Length: 53
Image 1 (cartoon, rainbow, N blue to C red):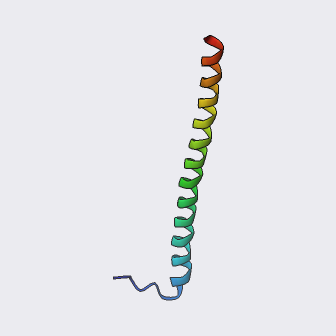
Image 2 (image 1 turned 180 degrees about the vertical axis):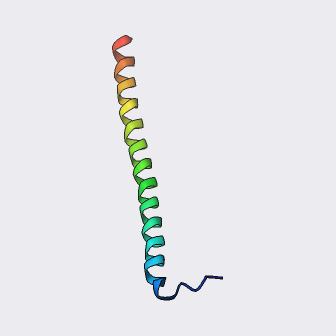
């Protein structure tokens, strides 16, 4: 199923591996940042609700 890459096998597979790792890291950081912003927004909304009441 995998094509013969000859002497470039390691370089190609390492590039694929690095790309996958970087994509997973990017998604993980995005989810972490989303949670942090969501928490901060909830705090701001809670403070705004208490001062208006």
